Amino acid sequence: MQKRPLGSSGLMVTPLCYGTSSLSDMPDTYGYSVSEDRARATLEAIFAGPVNFLDTSRNYGMGRSEQRIGDAIRANGGLPEGFVLSSKLDRDMETGRFDAARVRESIAESMEALGLDHIPLLHLHDPEHARDLSEITGDGGALDELFKLKEEGIAGAVGLAMGRLDVMDPILRAYPFDALISHNRYTLLNRSASDMFDYAVDQGMAVLNAAPYAGGVLAKGSAVMPRVTYQEADDAALAPVRQIEALCAEHGIAPGAAALQFSLQDPRITSTIIGVSKPERLAQTLDWANAPIPAEVATALAAVPYSSEDPEANRVYKPG
Image (cartoon, rainbow, N blue to C red):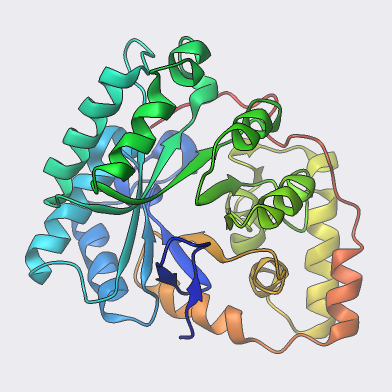
């Protein structure tokens, strides 16, 4: 698979990246569980496949994601050559503390779990859920410490990964990040991150677009998974999903393929992060990425009514 530069970091990544929050077993978020054996089989298949980019976080499954990935790395004898692992610094999940000291604790926990002494791409994660934003953005705070990790060579490149755009945008403009991750905010159902993507590209930042399936509904279907951005959805919220499904059915296209290619074909997006929870999803993802979609159908799908509002403004956040 052809690789692209991750901003000016020197890293080269595939246009697909696998996300691993679901592999950590987070039934509160996804509505299903993932066993350790299933996670291991999925990770082994990822390491053997053409995608060289994997994303995780310290708090996914309260540490289970990084631990499971670390076990797979050790079983593999290390990361495959040229593989780019992305992880994230996280607040103390009990107190919400996210100061410079917590940054050092978080990276130490990550390196122990992963069995690595260097993280190719390291993000500061979810500052909007911390107890005090000033601990993060103030002088000597968590963000300053993140950039120290890059200076020290512990992190190869650094980024910002979060949700609320009203909090994310000013932080993004205040620091020279190498990359950003936005999730659920640039999909067939939502375009709220579009202006932020424009700014990032102008600044030479890599744009990593996560969750193009709107939390899974565009991949699994509204009848099977009537949830949008991890929340139970009523008929009004599912109406555009069903419109997309009808359009795709008319032309013999999988809705998941349409949702994935909507992100893959945007020239601003360096890589699209796809959550996977079993080995079969890897082959399906590659098939969807290469499925033929006529230009007129893609245009019609992109014209389905979408929201420009934050899709998680009323989300009840559960990190499990």
